[in-house]
Length: 220
Image 1: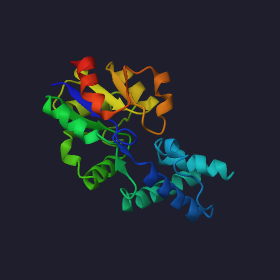
Image 2: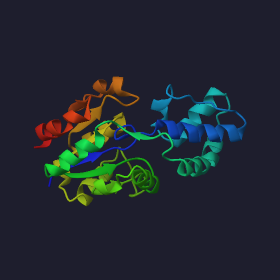
Image 3: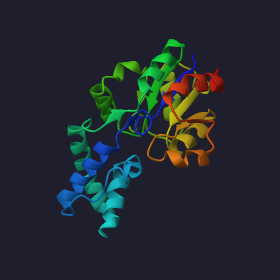
Image 4: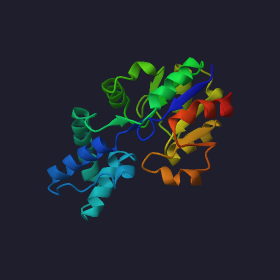
């Protein structure tokens, strides 16, 4: 079976609002107030908790790697409690997923979000059962851009890792697909969309309506 594997944050759903809110909660506990802004820092949000905490502390000239590590579990706890307050699926995302499944593709998710948080979010959004596999940052011993999480997502979706495609929104996704020797499609409607063409993916997605045709053209 051919498979279509999606990144989650910034690809299927705009999670930036809830991620930034959790980071700002940490900064308030540190005594710095709200340091990050939405939507200006939406792209930063999709680089992960440690990146947000590090960048925020640098902005207030208080960067300390030990503080970042101290507050990482605080961030996770805060985020878990309000994981879908602002998060929304991108328009047409699930219509495209259904169309791909109806066309016979296996469909899964490969994300650098911890697996339990990704599972929680997908269930809160009511779409967990629409995906045949879910690989998170801690499912395996390695994470993207290592190609093995992508390959395992394809396997668990019932597919051949050599006949898969990754839909993503960052250089991490582009590098993952390249390492796996398979094509990638990068979305242009996420926070870093204007930069995607410079990564030279096999496809650029402007609207989920176009995805099934692009997938068919690239992997058959």
